[in-house]
Figure 1 (cartoon, rainbow, N blue to C red):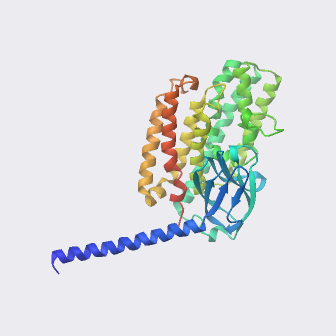
Figure 2 (cartoon, rainbow, N blue to C red):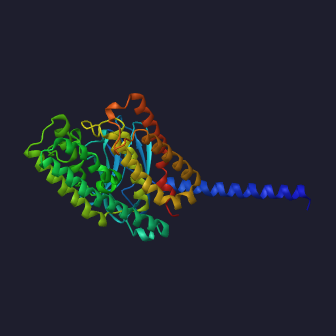
Figure 3 (cartoon, helix red, strand yellow):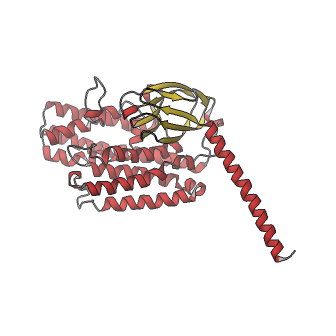
Length: 381
């Protein structure tokens, strides 16, 4: 066979193989789309295409057809958060890939991102172990390592929050202020794990405008308002400080039983970026202390930790995605480093200009988009 004919044959073989692979890939995409649970969220309804589906890796495709920004949750018993997607703008779509075990759950749409949400009951059938759940030993190791990380962050938080509470009980306003942001670092790095318990986050990290009707305001942000806006430490603040320590010790003890999977790690990383986008960039999170950049940095660190643990699998399955995430994490860390101070803290957020906030917002959006694809990249098929 001549070199020309050999080359032509090789090219023909390659073309056929490429077409076959493309067809196979298209079939997989079509099947994934057909198997997905579709959620149509409006201002008054939460329409779910399936109320029963098999356990294992589940894709939830969300379309916000309402006029308000919404978020979608999958809740287990006691409103334990199984997975979530926040900050879904009007007219936009989002997707969640999650590993869900057999059981009874609720899907909730929250127009305006407030309240208990509009809920639909769902049933997940069968056994996750026989329905495509993670079996890659690298993912098992990643989950174990992330649980250790979450426990370490909680363990490190307790001594600092105890010092914070002690300063409040001693009436030392300035010392309490200096310990406010450091006492939150471990929580902010692993917030999706803490939020998954359902009952702890509302007591420790709720802002005043996030209170439900009849809910008592407790936790960090109530104390933040007292320390900065009111410049007051009274008996109520001292009781709140003790309660904060108690609630965070509860968080610490629950981590060994937390439901953590490779996909929950990936989704949690995206949730941390959503936290930055909806709370830190706007300055709403720490509106009295203006310590938003400390929380921002902790959120990014936590997201990056989850990604790094999942990277061996993600880079193998989607090398371009891993390359993009590496670059975006490097860029956002470099941006934050410009605002790092000698004492380990960050520039007060009220000193950050609107133009600088726009730069932060652009960096968060640039990282958030590829990060939203991480869960799908670590699904074992």
